[in-house]
Length: 487
Ligand SMILES: Cc1cc2nc3c(=O)[nH]c(=O)nc-3n(C[C@H](O)[C@H](O)[C@H](O)COP(=O)(O)OP(=O)(O)OC[C@H]3O[C@@H](n4cnc5c(N)ncnc54)[C@H](O)[C@@H]3O)c2cc1C
Ligand code: SF4
Image (cartoon, rainbow, N blue to C red; front, side, top):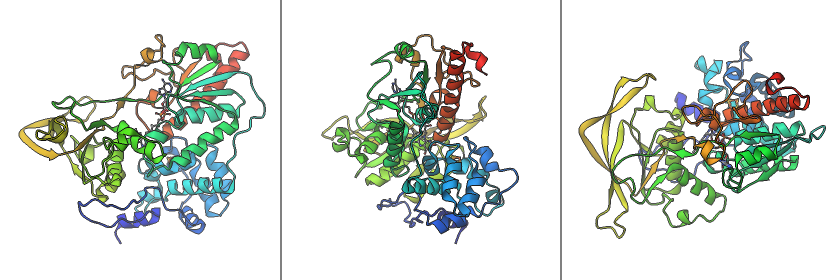
């Protein structure tokens, strides 16, 4: 058994059969197979309880990992759950979708010594899923109610973590979201084969039970300006994420069947939630029976290629202008995609999109003219710059092209009616990190809108930090102190 196979077995994930470039048709789940309690205990007991827990240091919420591994190894799961949920509002979500190879597990001393990491994420998921099953997960019950109210813009992980922490302190919390469901990218971005939607929905329901009010289908900027919300609440948290998709400039980019990644993933997630999605039903956002080309090399691109495989695409290619070593997406995701039959076309970019003469729809995409790239000298950021190679064109047949080139922040001062809101040069909200505060009095921010597109666990960390900062601010205000005196 190779080291790689062993790792899949220890993760409890089905080892897929190797079938070359042929797409695997069966619907295997990314989500780890359920551990039996003794398996979880065995795995947890592999932790060496080392003096400096690098796993904890490299976990953005600084989970007390060695302690809950020890408790799990001893079968004391309720205590393990209490320890793990003390630092993380959604441990079962992080256990499923954190890129552990870059965070806790990548820094496990046993992994560094070449013996394969303790599968921290899978155990974290097991502990919290067990807690749900056994009824140990309870809505927060504040010891006393406080009259001040906080308006949170965005029901993604940053907003939800902040809502729970503020409610725990007894504040009145309203979460506004322009979508019809809470969860942000947890519900409509991340595919269901990585994160089951019920897992997100039961968390939102728990917050409702705790007394958090959700005002959905409410877009700040359209239904009320940020200024109006500031008048309604004692403090505001902006946790609206980043949604402006980066685009491609190339001839033919306006042809039919060239779609943004988030439209494609949202349609797939909505239909898995039972919604009727006309663009999915018509086939426009369904990869079934199509030759699919995904353009981009990040985690969103990986989610698109793997979704296309599961929808029954004829072929799935991923076109990326750098090489494997320089791609931003997780290497683990690339390995999974390759096992599923996705073909990576490294060091290549689209030069033009080609439409179908002879088709009933003259604007229908039939393929891409791509060109080869070589990596030139590094720029100021240290990354080698992609340079097209003259005369290196080649053709890729495609019935569906998905653009997954990343996201930038929307123009918030304009979109939310907050002209005074200060931004960084990247368009993210400018923050005084010590106070999680924007330049507007009583307005705080957290998650992707301050970090740029990042990770769920960082959004949770920011949401928790912002909640603590808001509490300090409100207590200082009540005591008649200035905003900064609270520190
Ligand atoms: C396809 C995809 C896959 C990903 N996979 C992973 C993964 O596997 N692991 C991982 O850790 N991270 C992953 N990420 C990143 C992760 O999802 C984000 O970092 C995280 O969700 C950010 O949380 P947030 O709360 O800041 O914003 P979001 O989750 O984006 O939530 C923001 C919310 O604000 C709402 N909103 C926006 N504007 C307004 C407005 N004007 N009025 C009202 N509401 C508004 C939105 O509707 C949304 O619900 C992925 C991202 C994408 C796009
Ligand atoms: S929250 Fe993420 S990084 Fe932290 S222990 Fe859990 S899986 Fe690892």
